[in-house]
Length: 110
Image 1 (tube, helix red, strand yellow):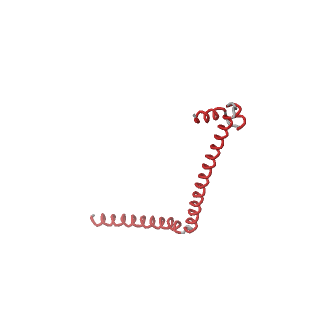
Image 2 (image 1 turned 30 degrees about the vertical axis):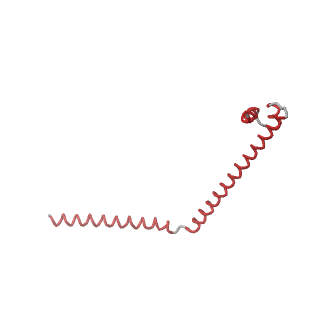
Image 3 (image 1 turned 45 degrees about the vertical axis):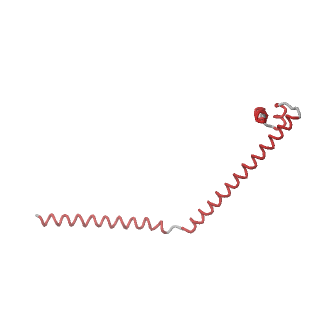
């Protein structure tokens, strides 16, 4: 009886070993595809993407600088027209901005 039990355990362990070996072989072929990826191309793509991000940041800085200059010019024009005696409504129409913006600029002057 004990010999039969030992043989049963050995057969079970053999079947488990075969299952484990088959699983390892399957995983090997699955992961083998990863090693065959074009890593150099992927690296170059990442580097190009990083360069593009850098350029976008520079463009964003330039845009902010331009917007700041534009706001400064508008502010100066509002103040100049206000000093010339134009009303908020007239200034807004001339500069194509809202009357509220004109009043805000004039209020910040004080």
